[in-house]
Structures are given as C-alpha cells and as structure tokens.
Image (cartoon, rainbow, N blue to C red; front, top):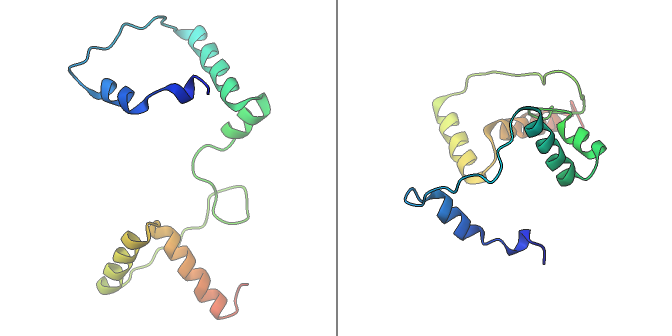
Length: 118
C-alpha cells in the first residue's frame, strides 16, 4: 500500500473545511522560478514523461466536436416552442447529459433518418 492510499481523505476534508481548525504554517514557501520548477517536477512525476505532460497540456479548453481537429466547431442556433423547450429541459435533467449533446444527437438522428449522413 502506498502513502497515497493510507490518507484518510474524509478526515482531511473535515479538518481543512472546519473554520475552527487553524491552518498549520507551511514548511517551505516557494516563489518565482523555484515555485515554477517545483510545479514542473511535480507534473513530470504525475505524468511520467515529458511526452505525456506535453500531450496533456497541448489542447486547452473544450475538445472539438466532430472529426476535424482544428478551429472552432460550427454553431447552430434556433428557436423552439416553449412546450418543446420544457420537454427538452425535463429530458436533459433526467438524462444527465448536456443540452448541447442531446441537440447534437437529435440533429444527427434526423439527418440519418433522411439518409443525408451515415
């Protein structure tokens, strides 16, 4: 069992979120280049290699929707009747999916049904 597995995270959370418990003074404070190097060393330990770290940091933000890897995804806007919106909103809450994912799926199913895409 590693040291990470021995940590009682529930007790740690309780201690760190209880305003009555004073915080301990830090053992070592790093600033500037020393802090940057410490952070980089930490990330390398976590990711295991420069390649894995570079891959994780390569694309900030949301992944692109669709097969293309560059540029913004196309956006479609449209108005729907209030009753349809209420039904969609209820479905979103039940499904746990994001509204945009459900709309994407619905448009795709519509286009497949009309044999416009496969």
